[in-house]
Length: 136
Image 1: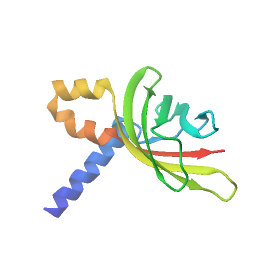
Image 2: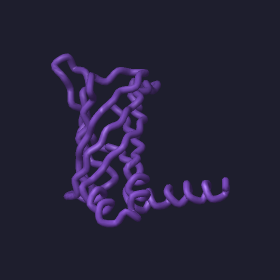
Image 3: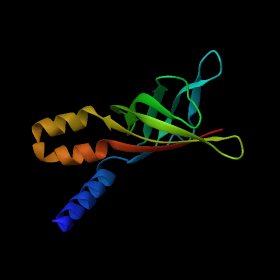
Image 4: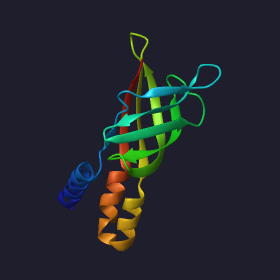
C-alpha cells in the first residue's frame, strides 16, 4: 500500500512539472509601494513566459507570513489567478528573500477538468506553486 501511495505522489509531481511551471520567480520584478514606502505587491516576468501581478493584503512585513492574491499570464496570453503566502527573510546585505507557496488556476485547467475528469489530479497538482524572489 505504501508503495502505491509513493508511486502516486511521484506521478503527480512529474505531471505537475510537465503540465505547468511549478516555480514562479519574478526575476526582474518591480515592487509596488504605498505612500509610506512599504511594499504592497510585485509585478514582473515569470518562468511561465508571462507576467505576474502580486498584491499583498497588507504591506509586506519582515520575518512574518504575508498573504497575497495574484493574477498573471503564462506563455504570454494564457491567464491565471491565484492566492498564497510569502515569508520575508532578511539577508546579510540588506536584501530581502521572499519564499512562499500558493495555488493558482487558469481557465484552461477548469475547462479540461469539466470535459475530462481524468485530468483533475493533474490540474490539482499543477495548481500548486512555489515562489522565490529577492528584493533589492
